[in-house]
Amino acid sequence: MASYLHPGVYVEEIASGSRPIEGVATSTTAFVGITQRNSTHDPVLIGSVTDYTDLFGPILTTDDAMGLSVQAYYRNGGGAAYICPLSTASVTGEGLFGAMIVSALGDGPWSTFLFIKISRVSASDFDMAVGTRNSSGTFYSLESFEKVTFDATLESFAETVINGFSAYVTVTVEIPVLPGIAAIPDLTGSEGDALDNVVGAQTSPAAADFASFYADTLRKIRVVSIIVLPGQTWAADGTGNAIISETRAHCDKMKNRIVLIDVPNGHELADAGTVETMALPTSTYTALYYPWVGVSNPLFHPDKNPDVSASVDVAPSAIAAGMWAKIDAKRGVWKAPAGVEAQITGASSLQFQVENLEQDQLNPLGVNCIRKFPNYGSVIWGARSLATKADPEWRYIPVRRTAIFIEESIYNGIQWAVFEPNDVPLWSSLRANIGAFMNGLYRAGAFQGQKSSDAYFVRCGLGDTMTQADIDRGQVIALVGFAALKPAEFVIVRIQQKVGEE
Figure 1 (cartoon, helix red, strand yellow):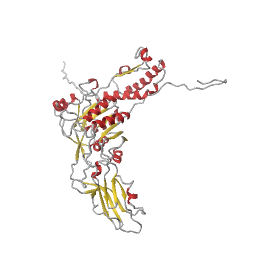
Figure 2 (cartoon, one colour):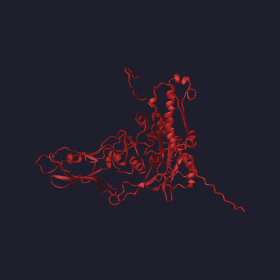
Figure 3 (tube, helix red, strand yellow):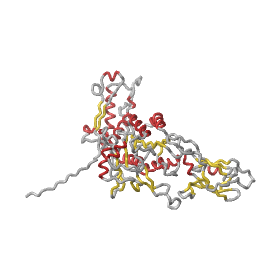
Figure 4 (cartoon, one colour):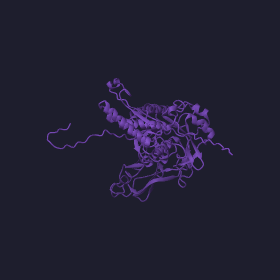
């Protein structure tokens, strides 16, 4: 307390007790799986495709499920994302070219798709290109370095020119040329030679690896609210997928994130029977989109690589995650990420066409269909979780995600209350601060109700939400309720003919 020792005027500031609660991010996505490059890297936060390719390399094969998923995510509005590599491979590819060792930047099988092309310019220098080969075996360059030398005393020395500037490789000259010696060491056989394939086949992590990752790493990254598993699909025959099951268990435990799962590539969900055969996980923290989507093939080039297909099918989970982020930013987490507003960017085709007859069978089972409509193109036409029948209260994705948003925001926003005196002033402050947050959401259109008392309530007090025994145990209990805004899934227009009257 202040001390008053002499006569005079004292000016003091009094805390208002207002501690505004800020809304948390709602669409930070974790991509968990195998990366083709730097496959044992720690989880890293990125904000664009460029961030991804800088660290994890370009897409050099259509088997790169992670790269294709990240690309589809950002094409459709994705924002912040954590790339979480889980791989057992850690060997870096390298090749020997005369007295020069060329090493791929980063471990993983991606180096097997890299090729080095060296061309002599003179007796003392050479050009070097780093590239790949197209489907016909023809080399095409990704980057090049001209008039490189093995003379360590010159600015054109290979290590000086390439290391730190190449996006793909580093070089080590084992026997630098001594001053006065004109010829460079032998580079026999290096024209278009590949980096040695020393990585071998990369194995997929086991479910136990995912369990450890979730328990030790991803659990601590609390801002993650969506999980995508590139390369993992739920078995068509109902045997499931151990990795998806482990991820679902993680989401059920954390209660603040949803995993988006995929059906196998090429598997058609023709009716309710095919869905029921799959025995999908009925969890409020899981969602499924169908079918796979054709997008432009990043490997296709009309001149350099014209023989490959111009399009490639990608799993819809990453597209949906991007759309969630896009709709969240534009309309709020309570808006269903579906409808004509959810037009898919970059979709050239759909693997299977879903019409009204098929969706009549799939929608009640929680399968969110992607459909093609005239004037709108390919759009997401469903907004259900897989808890459709098991837990109908959380049938709709925006309802579950709105609840997560409220819970996480309040969790972060009332940490100040821990160890405060558990009495009337604390209860009043909690009611005021949580109430202000909920009223802001109501004014933003997040809840049902014509007036705020219909839309939400916040209660906290002795004899209301807690007993004296609760207080004696050190507990302060606040009860928050809200009227969830459910999507208008079925728009019904009834038309009646007006009969003329005399």
